[in-house]
Image (cartoon, rainbow, N blue to C red; front, top):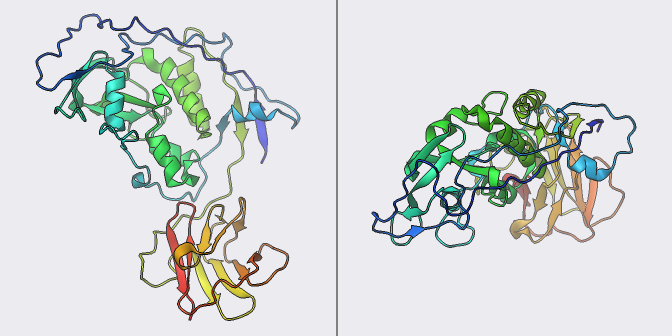
Length: 383
């Protein structure tokens, strides 16, 4: 994959917060009027954070010659690429949220509300599972909110944007981890419901916070999240980020890596309902020979797009035997690959030997094909 590396070191310095326990100017803190107890965050931010101090050179792209760049430099660069055609369809249900990871009855949304409240929160019931009131500063609009029902918890990098930026290939566990990330403060942020819905799934090229004083921190946080999760940015997105970073008192330097788009990926078909006929979708099991030596299962790409089979699996009933496709195995449109068991030989792009022993040696055994997300795509029974 061709890479043009632009080097300008990424330097981020910590911001000193206001003193713990202080009340934001102009706000009156009174948590004694509710019947259900209060919670005081360990650290309460009492004012809008100051811009982060960074290197003085402006963002820029400088072409590097040669191909011997250090791996650690590449791994920390913001990747710049377009959105590949033919991506699997985004499904918000794949990104499970909100979850209660520590099993304390407070899900991620309410954990964020507790963490980001400027003052101690109150709860809806004595169980203290759901936040009722507090004081939050929405940095998008510079608005103070005291009623938790008026707030949304926003993914700074929207889930749909993450999907288009590379997360389409993640499994559901990693998608859930991203959707509920609390280890990196800017990842989830309490904002007014209207601001969150105005933003939707838009990147900075289409939507920016109303409060321009927050543009610097917003853009820096956006880049940090993209780099942290190995997600890419489009050229238009990067240009918008540069414009926002330009509002910083000391604009940061950002290392970028311009990379080629991945090959088109066939859109994953809906999961095959259990018990229905096989052969559903463009990637399917087209034949199975259970009584021969070797046994053969044939997987066919009847679509028009190249399919990356990385992480796809073929299993017998009950997953007693499982074959997982290696990283980078590509199934071209209109081609087939045969998986052979009970024999040995040299693997090619059309034949794979995966088990020396017989697998499909019982009538009624069922070969099931799962995509990288664990969704059932096709199945066929031995007869």
